[in-house]
Image (cartoon, rainbow, N blue to C red; front, side):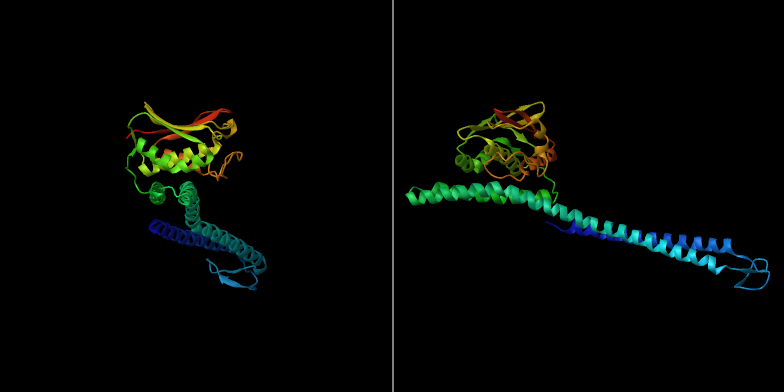
Length: 321
């Protein structure tokens, strides 16, 4: 990813901090000098006996400055000045590291997102390798499995490229075709479904396109299917379907799991939010959050359309291309 935007933000923040410290120090020093001058004028008195410290007055008279009275003011102003300058330095330090903290937060988010998004294709790849090994040991043809492995590797490359483009904020004007995304997503999660003894059914309502990059659309479908497979009981079916209406293209993923509680219906779309560990694999609470981020970025939405002890249906709404 390009570091130029981060470097520009850090340089801008450094300039702002420099100006902030300079102005703050000037204000503190000016205020301190002003207060000290005011104290001198208030404590000075005419010198009738020509003693003490003498200064020429405006009328040529001599005045006496009470050093014992001024000394506490000088000490107090010095202490206050040190405290104020320390506060300014603290605020300046916070402002100077804010871009670094933001960049670190974005880096951590990208690492977490990438780790999650690569997890499902890698799990499918591992399952495919196991299938290849069993076929090889039995002497069965391995060419179809090798071809599928090549496809899995291409999926990994596409996912990583898509995430890098999203992290850079690159403008995405691509159009995704729903049926093609369905086919790619089903191929990716088929090994997971087979391992879980879950059937996959696709009910695409004809050719339709959405305003979302093809790889992103496939990632979203994979995430929803993977979530459904993890919570679907053995021997059940997970259904992936689509249709269009006035809202745009509607994509539904349904499972026969135990459902989502009312308290978790919105929370499960938050990052790192996890419900009871009912799935087969330990989740990290990122999949549905990433689905929502991708949907919102494309001008769409994702919600739980229906949930009960008999199953759950997720509804992904995307604008038509």
